[in-house]
Length: 180
Image 1 (cartoon, rainbow, N blue to C red):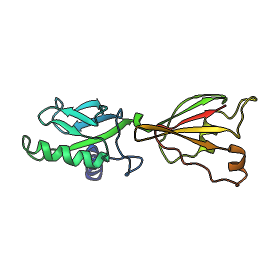
Image 2 (cartoon, rainbow, N blue to C red; image 1 turned 120 degrees about the vertical axis):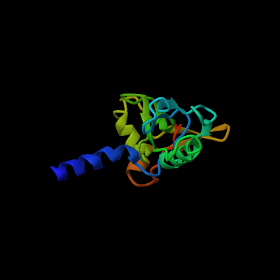
Image 3 (cartoon, rainbow, N blue to C red; image 1 turned 90 degrees about the vertical axis):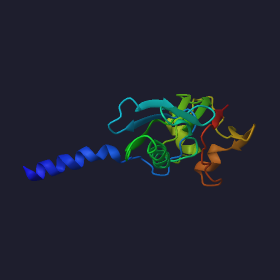
Image 4 (cartoon, rainbow, N blue to C red; image 1 turned 45 degrees about the horizontal axis):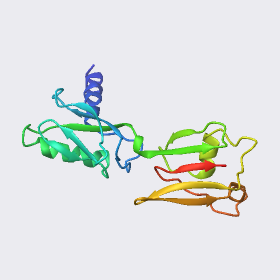
């Protein structure tokens, strides 16, 4: 019985630990977050990171979330809340990583939006999109990548990539892959 209670106690402590699929995940605009403050239900909430990178929380107001890991944001929230609450415990969970999307358009079986939940390359996203249609020109793919305020086209020849004649291209959040 004592062992079961000890295990229950350990289980009850788990909400204090932020567990992420990738400890290096960087929060971005439009990400949906669950912020839970232990014992303070009226302060806990699900929130979306605004385009300016900020979130708004009771008591502490606006706080920058963009560019931080969930653990970094959690520590900053706990520090800010410590002015109002004795030893606050907080957890930040990324519910929906909307800032890490890529888009595939054109002559693929299933065009659409895909989430980058890990490093992914052009050859892999084509597979996720169901492969090429019979009319696809796989040697003339364009990746549109945002750099600053500009959309930069990157030409890719899928046929040379899969034959090892060209390196596969690592995709970045916001990339749009166009298969003519």
